[in-house]
Length: 628
Image (cartoon, rainbow, N blue to C red; front, side, top):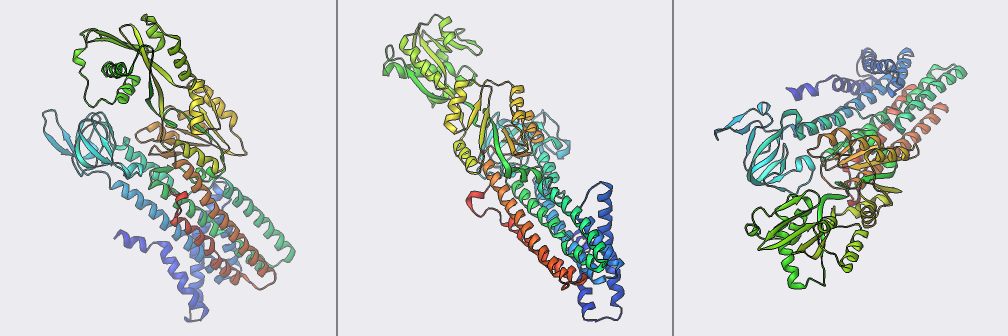
């Protein structure tokens, strides 16, 4: 019934009537066709005049305003056929746009289908019951079995599973979830099973927030707030003034009407939103939420990109680059023993450096920490740890911490430590029985392919890639050199980052701020375009950014700029073809070949050229360089 209702709506009925009345009137097939022609011309004019009226109330100059003037003039001049032709194009345009909005709604409906209809809750007595998703509360224990979609955002408290997160991130590769992992609504358990503690339910889940964003980005007719909108305003003003002058000079209302019918920009009013709407929909399917057409257009003019370090360039996860053994006091057999002892000590601590050391040593089995002397383990937050193992005293920590504990340093090891720190690495030292044995060189791990992403940005015309970080100068320089940044600014407080961005903003180009969205909300809002990377599960990122990448993949950013350039190429082609056809049409009017009816027919036929050109966006990114 719903589909039938959609078929018989006003615009579809009007379009059929307009298409029928043209051949009937042309071949004089029906004795009263003139009355039907007049009636359809007037009926078709009503929604256009109403739209123009709303635009005037909102103090806007729109294409519908120009079309309304042309239609009213046609009716006053009894140019019924001209009115029918222009209404035919306007009605076709409205149907075309409605169709694409329906496609967007279909995308949203497909997201809605990802929401489970029932949720399995584990009660305090261990009994599992099924409840309506609306009744799930924060803190509820949710059970998800193989083949089921996770209904909430939560933390895994037991079980292990492989989860397909493509519904949120667009990434087809499944991820493994174990205890303490974060799990997100709508994602599919493809192997194993999970028990979750609910962190977010209902409208607060990641899926619901994405649905809301997609609705806002797709269902509203995209407003081009930059070049196209400015052009449309000036164009319409010039046409109005030109038409008045033409009438004052010629006193020929039909001549002025023919001009208006040729230059009515109804095709551009549909072609441009069509291109952008399709591109935004394309992004949404791939886990990229673009919150408006203006942001997509602005990407074309980006010359400066600001990037945060932790969470954007680096993983925010420490990694041991190397273990340096003091050759004076540490031979190869000692080295293996020291590494073993380091792992035994480090596994007792939750500090990120300790975890990095454990990962580096790659213990296949959990170390025998039972041999650690009871009550000997000590941890001084941010400084170091110590314990007695098999009767031997082990200390693992910073240089000052070991010095406080009376560990002597040789000149040779101090030089090596200094060299590593000059390179931008942090060092953690290890001593055994009061003797320094060596140190671990540690750094924040770079994200994969980050340098390739930076190189791609430069190829696309980005002139400055600036890292803003609170880290020290040496660390910032090392990262800058490794990934190919054009410049960096270190030791910055959050307010200093904002000041730097504010000073760099310009009317001559656009800026991007790329961050993980957790600590970068203010910076994301300040730049021309804020891009939150890896925002799945982070409300601040989703709300503060203009573009949201649900997957933590920097390569999406140069691809987005490439997308913007591609769509704007199509938009420019639309303008060029529209301009050429207008010039040809005006020449035909001025040499008196086209009268109002012919001008309206000419406008109707040529309007399809930019529309068909915009449909090229449906075949987005056949080439690999433009693929998201």
